[in-house]
Length: 218
Image (cartoon, rainbow, N blue to C red; front, side, top):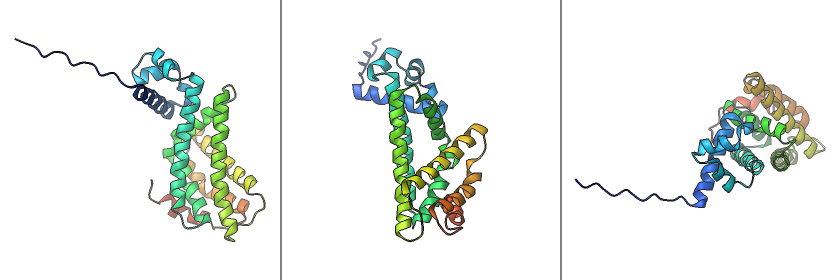
């Protein structure tokens, strides 16, 4: 009885291998944070030998930084897409607050928390953190500046206001994750604090939270 000849094994291209390794690193970071990205852990998740990870990643520091940038950059793109659907600056701030405090962003919050700690000893990650924080600050600056131009907000320093809003978002998200509480419970207080910072009419942002939280997700 004849048997079929074995099928030749198809070698994966360098691009495919690289994509698999970076996808494995991203999945692992989402589940366990950046601190979980070790050579052996990434190799095991990708189903390859540790030496292959070393071949396709310049260093583990570079892989950690690249994974961080990819994950948090994608989150910002997602949030910006949701924010653009809102009708005015107050609604956009409400939409942003509702979006970033949702529970489905906890995995990215974990990535941020790990990054702030690891970045002290990983220069490449430190640079990536600064780049991503600048991108978030620019997003918020655009929103509050649009509101001021429309006459809905009154403040002097857009950069300072946006940095403070970003710091409050980060603080609430990190504390909620660490304590195991629901970050959305603090959305109203955050919105009210934003109203004070941007010089908006009381309720201009906080009163629109419910509608923005119920907005279709991208």
